[in-house]
Image (cartoon, rainbow, N blue to C red; front, side):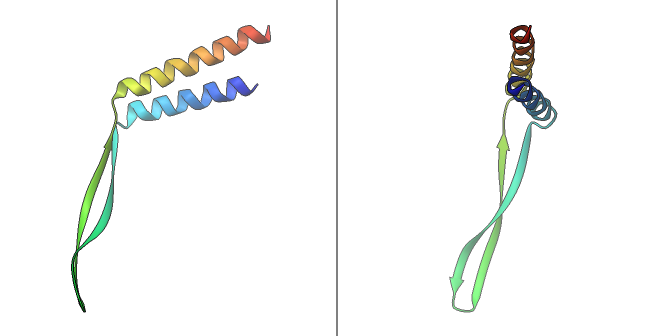
Length: 73
């Protein structure tokens, strides 16, 4: 039972990683801080991965589910 849940989670994560190859998040950094004057800058931080990682997770999830079915029999 636990193997099936792990397999399903791997499949879902694999599909999401194939559909979305990257995401961005923004952070603010102080550039100048002189008394009452503050200058900040927003910086984009991209996080990207290869879709191959999603395919590997998808195949791994399928293998885990198939192997758990064989061991249940």
